[in-house]
Image (cartoon, rainbow, N blue to C red; front, side, top):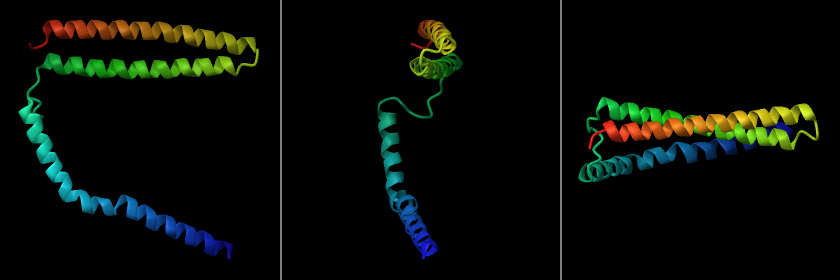
Length: 130
């Protein structure tokens, strides 16, 4: 009896999963192509054509900005982890010192990333198109 209930629950789950994930793909296939056609027309009308040729300096600048933003997110997570470590140390001096060092290193890293981002943005505006 228990196995029958488990099999029935799994079957209902699989049917629900199929109906939620697969069936809408067939229904929305034609709407998706119309959506992309209108999106391309809007992009072309506003000058944001996806086939626009970018200069090498512009592309490198965009890649560097994305990379620095990603590093900023990593250091933000590191700061949160250090804060949680400090809060849950329960008076243990070793954990508190470890958390303090992590926070200090995260602050230094964020300062370096912010300066690198500012320098990249400045250089990008000086040598970029425009």
